Image 1 (cartoon, one colour):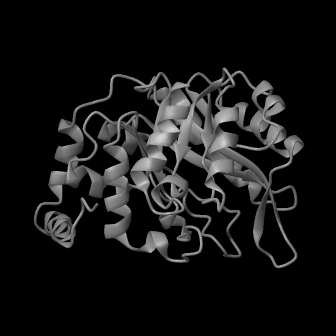
Image 2 (cartoon, helix red, strand yellow; image 1 turned 30 degrees about the vertical axis):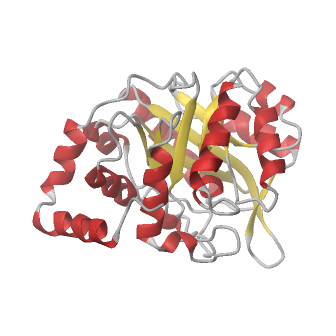
Length: 297
């Protein structure tokens, strides 16, 4: 099933060349969502902000997210499924979807710091190179997302922390959601950044992220699903969105873990990207529908 064709891509390019002002017009005129509760009572968002950080891998395909037509096709199909409430993405992705007419009535969360490019020496220096609070508010979107990785051995962490605190405060001033995705991270022997998914590390990252900025009134945490979620969810009284994570070879086991974590009362939804856009077997609709079904159980 294909919904986005090469002709659609040509139309997007033509709009950008001949009528770039149309993008702002589409954002201003689109039907707004009624809130952040979601169709199922919990928020279900499709994520696609990895490409802007140079992270293109999905499963065994190192360049899966490097094909824009394929990515948009899968996103449009996912967004059209019942129970899917919106999208998390960078400006290029969101504006492509606006031109395609895929964001009517949808929650839109703009990705803010994409400067920590994957695999670089400066990866932990997560500069804010995407949306800011003002541009998110001006476009009529519902919030902003930031990645907050804490490396105890990297002094640039404190700069990222300050920037995330400032962005959270700015979003709160506009009455918009601040979605903070925290990790305790480190470099392994090869120099690659790894996230510590031990219970202690995830709890610690959640408590630090929850305390950012002068107010947490509009802050939601985006947290990974680990084996022992009970202490993680007990660490904060903020709303929690579950992070879908990498494409799993065993999708049934991944879904079982999600379903178990969704039982927590503070879990207010899921934000899933590659696991649903590039599922094992390639059936986007089936993967999305199964996830939505979990959220209603």
